[in-house]
Image 1: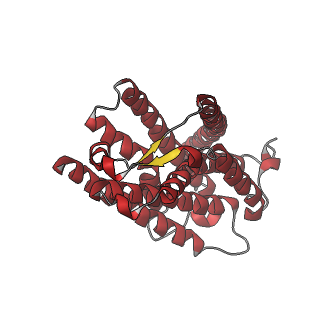
Image 2: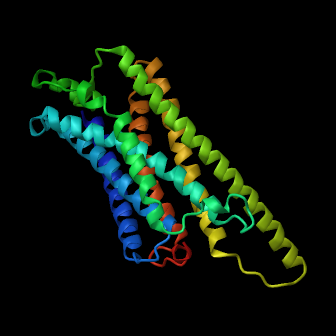
Image 3: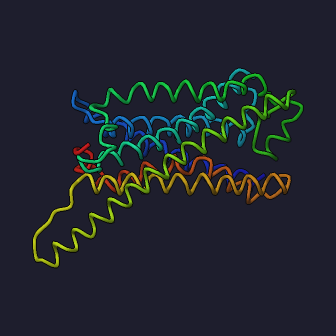
Length: 298
């Protein structure tokens, strides 16, 4: 019981820290809001908002699990929290993928054949964000029908499994259809990330070679802000992929071990929200904390 309480308090502290970081980033970018806002700014605002939803929903469920406050939640609340958490997870990978593509196009040469893909303004991104909201809402629409609330008779299971809701699917075919849709979505978006990141790495390598040539020629050269921004976006993408695949491996391990490893369970809980916690501080660090010189170029 003490161990679970300690892990729970650490989880809550990390969640609270992540919420503060995302709100700071959200407010910081919103303060730059103007008619000429660039697409990358809007995507970073949306990413911070999505991360906040993830952390709030996970934080509430974890708080209920720690202090066994099951009487404060009904079945409807249970379904809403888990549904929002799943939708936010999908929006996280969707936004990160789109952010990588937009930044890759931004740093492309003006003669590049991909240059036509660059949004003319932030408002051209809104239809894509709306599409992602609809897509991820539909992919997760089966959850409200199969999420159940643990009864008061099973309160001991809450403290043991750190969960008060469970997934009960009576139709395995429908369950596998939605699982396949989620896997397909993640595979496509990560494939897009791979293409965009590879393109950015290639352009950054060419830029690095150019800088070395100018330094050899004793000529002064200042790194363009968009190149620095590309490095920040790449860092965000690699951060997401790290937490995503680490979460997948731990989930597979727990599946085959029947979830009996308490350390692995705790690690899995952190990995599910790790990106939402770490990503805002990566942005704060890359943008110079309270100063935002890189943001202004978007």
